[in-house]
Length: 120
Image (cartoon, rainbow, N blue to C red; front, side, top):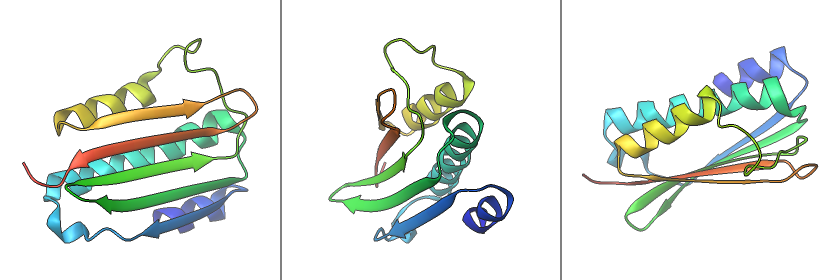
């Protein structure tokens, strides 16, 4: 529903794919992943000028990985101050002993990967 709402309100295509069995995740982890998607979509709309975003949710052994990629204007992560949106993503992930990786470059879009353990 979130994807449909954003596509209707903004000129952006969003592709969502999942092969993860989310039933193995606690309710708290499911909510956290949803909030991260919301936060990053807000960042993309506000800052990137992207026309396409791909959201992938995958199970990798003992981890679940959420990957959000856009084709926007990108940025240099070493030169950009981490705003409240990215800080929230890092803090939410850290709470569940997960990891965040940000790949971005000017003119190359941005990919955020979040990995959290399935059990804990």
